[in-house]
Image (cartoon, rainbow over all chains, first blue to last red; front, side, top):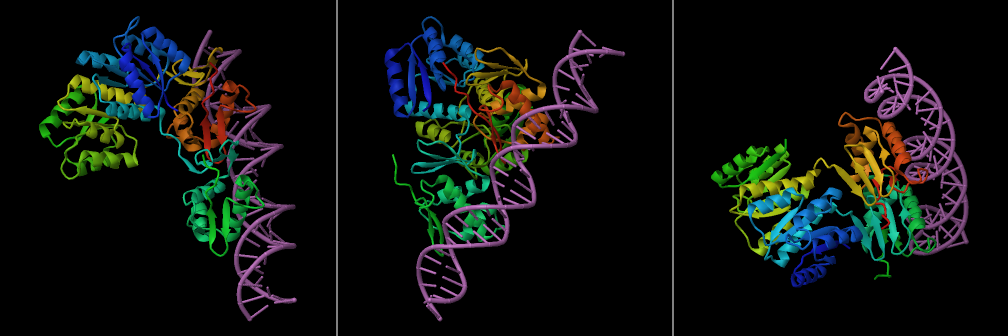
Length: 228
Length: 228
DNA sequence: GCTTTTTGTTACTCCTTTGTGACGGTCAGA
DNA sequence: TCTGACCGTCACAAAGGAGTAACAAAAAGC
């Protein structure tokens, strides 16, 4: 879960902020002055910092510079100071976003998410059905709670096609196109590939429950029953 | 030079904007409606887009979505619309920043630079992932608490590319471009370079945990679990 | 100019991936 | 019951990817 460090000496505001962010699905840690902010940063390694400007012990701008000197973590300034000089100074000190109080909670969350989108990068594309997930990029299948299963390129494309059509029967021809492309391949090759994939991901490869054969039609991926 | 596409149907404002940005050292191209914006984007491949909301032919939000569908280029909305709904809608459509008119030129430039810093990745002095850091200038890799590891120029560029895409698989081709440039190199050279880098930074070079091989796909840098 | 470092080249090995042929079981229809 | 289509299973071999190592060429440092 994405962890956010909130730094504000106004306890009431910090609480409201924490509540808002937690409700949006973030994990929140708090600090109420500059020194504590740096300590918390070192201890918690948050994914983003929301920083007030006026703080006891060390002002927000200094905190921003110090953090930036050793890390690239996104920093959002949230303060009552609204002059051009302040905004520019903060951004040049390495802040990623500058929001003035009072703020709209909805907008704040949207802006944080925009910053995070850039900083963390795109989340990897992961397909899933029930307890089974597939990381296409890494070519890994995963049973919830199990160890990752390495797949070959062809196996990955096959499972990908099946996952994208959970519960729908895919014909041999369409599967061949999905896996080998328009050039095609023989149905024996698909047969073999299905066999190999089953041995890797079926709980009991001898009695397939996941990839079902529909005779004279094709194959279908059943949604595994053990769901959260 | 960094190229910025300005999209605004208010000719006077667009000119002022262009002047401001040119004086700040940017290259500027203009478009005055939605369709032209997409054309200019395809032709010029700008590094950033400044986008008005209300445009002839196609509104800014649609332009934003369309561009975002095919590219990752940073987009800054610059508009008179200030309601929460508008801001949230734009950010969720993929905009990186939302600035309301009237705007302060200084602040605008500072915000654009903050966005660019994130998106392009400033000539980042120090990159890090978990307990591993890389000082590009000094060509030193560092394990938290360990002694610095000297890297060669090629090794540095390789690790830099991997660090900038932590958790994402990079193909052999793209890595070659990152390290040797568009002229390219053979995959054997990359293989050898990976081998050499692993021997320097892997805790156990014989069983790599940091730089993982995804056979037939490429390599990926795993975020090392940093011990607190 | 000489030494050291860095980079490119080649060769060898191991192992994975994939295609292919073969064999047997099942089931519907003649 | 026989037959043929379909499917699961297995073993084998070709092809190629990737790790390793040693050596040569090129560049950098003194």
